[in-house]
Image 1 (cartoon, one colour):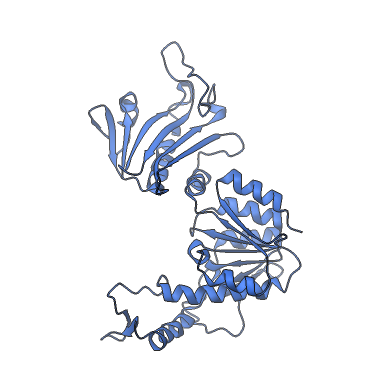
Image 2 (cartoon, rainbow, N blue to C red):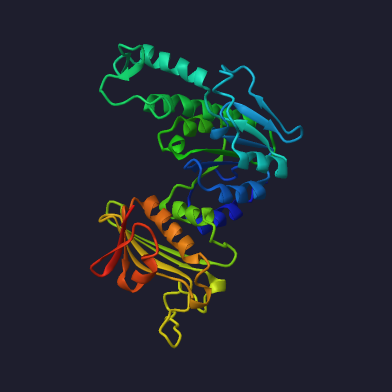
Length: 351
């Protein structure tokens, strides 16, 4: 039995969104940005301990933790050179540790070739073969085999059918991880599961808050059990954030919780702030970052500031920021980092 209350709490804690279809879902479908959210996904896998894990990035391969051997799905069109690529190492680690059978739920390159031909044959008002024999779109937009809307529709159907197939094979919860685009509202996956009377919970990890938190989990400096993170998002009527505020405090290297907005700053006799972390405002409209970054005087010279700057820049890139503007009080600190220069009252770097 799947602990839905735990999943809801986990979703809220990480800033994700959840769409629950049914009263007693036993399937969790996770929408991701490939390469992110690995640590958070492991928390989910560890909690649910599914018998099978379907994953888009495993392609058409399988992995059996009992034999620790890779295999391929039966009855599939396979190009042995290109389709039998490596399985993501973190999924194999999960498989070995938790005893989960891995199954790829993507199409092979050989199967994508078939999809191309069908698109040209069945949708001649949209697709054609160009002079070089390659598929083109009649409207002139580039055709990318892994991203084209028509191809994605075929993938959606395939993924939905695989979820139905493996849901019937297990009495344990089933976890499926795919790119979030495959779970858009019009995706055929929803209709396929509905037609099969399958209840499920869809977790969208790609919310802005969820993506920012993933950057913390990926960084070398973040300690989730101890550090404090505060994220505030201000939306305009179009739901595009006008400001994203991120407060981060390394608790064991600070004498007060800098992320607590009711807490007054604590300084020493030299007016040095006695916290380690940052308080930043990211402004997507003007593509700038302003705020303050600090390392407690007792812990300077250990590379902590460098790690904080790297984390700040990764968050900025995630939000679509292309310029850092830090307050003048940090100019001596930022002068040690390549790319920062003094402009007026700010240390500035273009990303």
